[in-house]
Image (cartoon, rainbow, N blue to C red; front, side, top):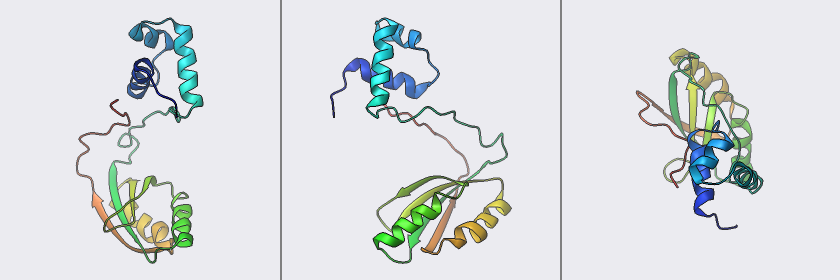
Length: 153
């Protein structure tokens, strides 16, 4: 992995805060012309520092305001069961994030639902069909105080 310099880190910070910032605006912030900034951003993408550009959607405006963190314990711990669990979870639209974690649980899911009835349907009909799950524990978000995808470099 190559070493990033201060300019690269500043470009990543700017893009992390606003992926629609123009090359021209970034160039002005780092005191370079647009061409070298464009080449640096292109190289950062090619080297995997920038995975993709996304729009952060307001789930509440789309009537998906209920956020639930679901802790999952698997029935057993082996490679095939873990792989099957991940394969099954990737198919569930309500799950927006899935982490393999340490501690009392094996996985942590972030789930969006319209309301409690929608979440109940999700648990019984979708999550309940994932045969590798031993148990679940749901935590409901009352208020989202901070949500950022940017890394403070």
